Image (cartoon, rainbow, N blue to C red; front, side, top):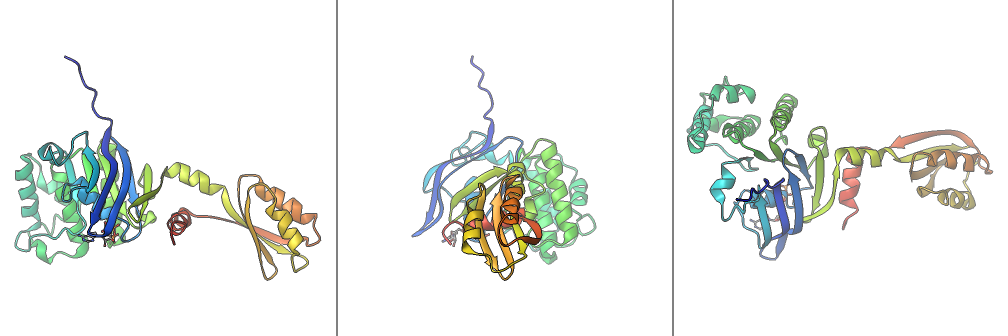
Length: 313
Ligand SMILES: Nc1ncnc2c1ncn2[C@@H]1O[C@H](COP(=O)(O)OP(=O)(O)OP(=O)(O)O)[C@@H](O)[C@H]1O
């Protein structure tokens, strides 16, 4: 008998399209998430994140293409997929007449596991409120209850739709910590957000979705390295205005993307570790001279905004 190695991917989307009437929510999406990875699925409102998550959870079916979790198509092998997956969907609302604890008891019975519910309630900070009706929980408490429900079955894959949005700083810190701990014990995590700051410190890799298409995918480390060299040099010149011939010379320096003037300042966008030194020597030799200069580095948040803006806006 030949032994099949386990599929290395927890998630595989192959040319997946999902339309609603004439709206294309997800367009020809290819995306893979390796086992054990912590993947941040980013995009502005309406990008198609919730639709993608609906496809992963088999709440929705693709119009075209294939979805696979651990190598299984959730349409054909729903039980095999569901028993390994814990999910926090975006619109999760608790049953108003059940307590927080009863919600977890329900999930425990569905999964047939012997979970210590107090441990889960404590982890999400709901132990004291566990015997209150969940219908009266605040938004943050509801999200944390949803997260506890996703965890009870000890899943191999967690799919979390905006788990941090709307939480207070303590709630956000707690949820991030839980996500990190789960990932450290080997759980693959797929977490969506419309704010890079919510997931930046957590994720191994991020993908940015817009209009149903993946604009870019990168490890946070690569994104950061790229950005470290993407900066603006802001130069106060000694003699203004800056002649167009000087701007043209600066623009011709390798690594310079743009050079523009505002008042007595010349602003040069550039990338590359040595570019700023070349710009400065070019200007020092010019008729403008340099009175002062500073370097402004782009933030990850800027890059996220730029990636979204650069496409179709
Ligand atoms: N059931 C539906 N019927 C019609 N259009 C839909 C439906 N669900 C989603 N859409 C449309 O698909 C597109 C993607 O929506 P989706 O909810 O997946 O985006 P999102 O990235 O999750 O946005 P948000 O961050 O606002 O939750 C939007 O244009 C939305 O209006």
